[in-house]
Image (tube, rainbow, N blue to C red; front, side):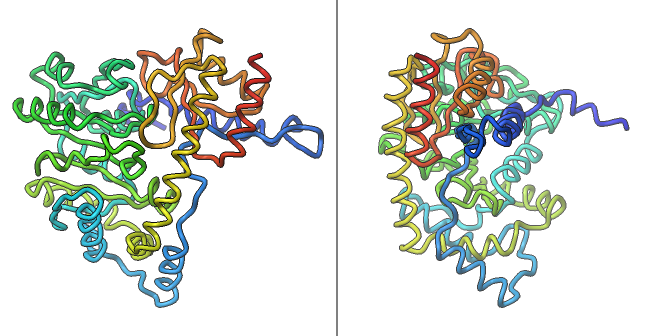
Length: 393
């Protein structure tokens, strides 16, 4: 069957290929405790081990029992948009008009809608290398060209304003950033973000910032939304990470007022609305009891980071920049192998620890770095480090 040529420009998602290999090995005798094996420890996928808190589950059950499952408006449940706007006020001290908020089927749908509304063939969009692969593929799917700019540890693996100015060309339409970032867990300093936004604004471009991990920030210096820099900044967010609702597929985007009708039109046609049950349940995320639970979980993630980073460094897996958010460590494995792909494959087969090689996140340092997710519980992380120590000794 003939497929669209755009597929030729979209690379496989190697994270998922690695996950399939790890899952297959996990079902083998080598990982079966009943046969003397050791269970696979999955530190490769960015999914919290926490699930939705009790009030969210309760709200979902009530919604189903009462039959409140009809479509919501394409922009989303008005009550949820109001709650999100209020959260920006209490958490970040920002006034965000609820009319600028559009509820989406996960942050992925938000990125798809925004890129479709803004980019087309002939445009290019600047992103850092490393960055989350799906972000550049959303750009590619519109016919535009994602342009990856190498960003090393001296820049916290992020774009900076000087790089944006130096690489801006007539075809450049804007930048797509992530703060905190997947795979590095690093954020853009507020002063640098302001300089980037200004540089883009002066060139008539658009700034899109993926902020899905912003709630999981561990350093007050970076706990600021780019929305503070003006109504022309586009912010993507999600209920998956801080709010622990990965499989509920619910996110949102804060848009410039002039862009709301265009993105609403796309949403109406592409998926009508996000899940009604998920939206009604998510209202409970903003109750004081739920927020207190999310904050306890954030503290747990911070404790895991504080354990994992020195443990990796002691194994010769250097971490050039300590992650200040999210639940990822971007570690340099070049002391042990010239290929992060080979290193991760060896550790999966010998230590039964699944890690993610750098291949997905951009070519600049794909062979040097790997990503470890510390979304797993501390005892699992301790066991994983012990196994890696055994193999690397």
